[in-house]
Image (tube, rainbow, N blue to C red):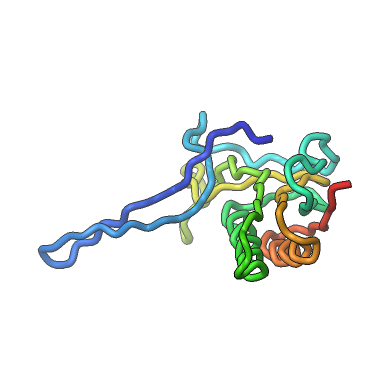
Length: 172
């Protein structure tokens, strides 16, 4: 279970058109930490071994298990979550929606990047995004409240979003 604090980002975009200025609210459903101790971290290595925490279904009846270690970007996590919710809404149109999704990974490591055509040196680049490290056998997504066929189809759609191989698991 994740006990970290996260932030649902809502940004305001201010535009000036001649002498008028107006603000437009942009909502991006992105989960990342409010604060970190350091703004830039080292990349590190993804452990190939299997870690014991996060390898069992803890909340739902169905889930997706990662087959290899790697990194998930915050955009891939959000895209997989939206694909799963969309599949549930399409499959259960006209019925009561009691489906639930748990995202068990949090993108808490910042990734830095330098602009193009910048010479070598002069320090590390600015933070550009967030990633989550996923170990082998970890379950990033769990779902409940839907039939087996709908859950399997939603997991298939969600598996296409991150760049890692996953498999569908059932609670036993």
